[in-house]
Image (cartoon, rainbow, N blue to C red):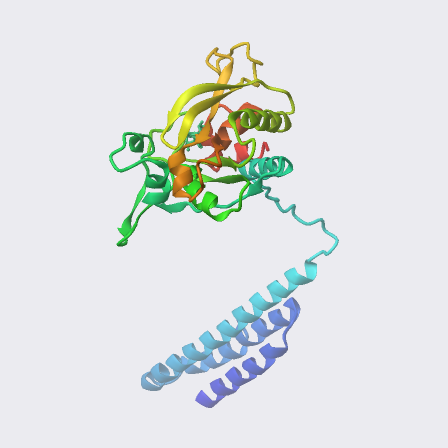
Length: 339
Ligand code: FA5
């Protein structure tokens, strides 16, 4: 009887290979597993055997039945899948793939770079990780200088013999390097992400973007800077806006100014965005301090120049009437999809 069971299993294995329709599968089931099938016939014989033989053959019977059931299940899965494939309609309209797009910040940075290029400025790239010398000492900000507190940031635990490393707090960190390496006259802008360890609010983020501007050579004075910025803002905002310089202090510029732009939203009349002043602070600037020029190896008797640092999020906020700087990094698609 064991031999009969082997024959049944071999036959099932052979037949199952050729089965490729639901009908033939059903015939297979009836022939082997059905109530009047081959296995049932054998079972009827087994139950009539002596107990010892019955137990031994019973176990083998169960094994064979299990194997045939497995063959049946696998073939069933194969037939269902192939049926699905056959039903695939190549004319059915596909599902729409959601397309991403460039983030508003990167769109604006590209636009800003293009405007400055038209004005004769080169584009330079800095690094987010800079040395303590680049971010502070080279800019006339020695250790313990109070303005280091304003530019508190994230320091790396790693340091080597010569340097401590930090995430740059401003794009000014590249001033000396660029002034050292570029031939005079220099007209250059450096866009990039900067980091600050500070409390966030609607106008302050711990991570934002700046555009550093540097000009050294003939006519590179605050008058030229005012003209350059006026043209830049006209291009960027599509309307002529008044720019005013307010005296200020930065250790790396002398004299220093804070640049205010006429509020785009109320056109200088006063609204809650500009806190009724009619103007908004958008950049720091000034004539490059002789300390910085000397650090870059430039002859201060012959050359002078200006520098400015513009908050990129701030001008985008003005152009699009965005009331919270934290939205830029929020990853909120409701915000991102608007631009
Ligand atoms: C500076 O970072 C100087 N390096 C600017 C400078 C460059 C002065 C060259 C002179 C010469 P300040 O910390 O003020 O300055 O930042 C410049 C601009 O960055 C601000 O006017 C503002 O537009 C933007 N800004 C500053 N802090 C934040 C912040 N937490 N979140 C968003 N934007 C900010």
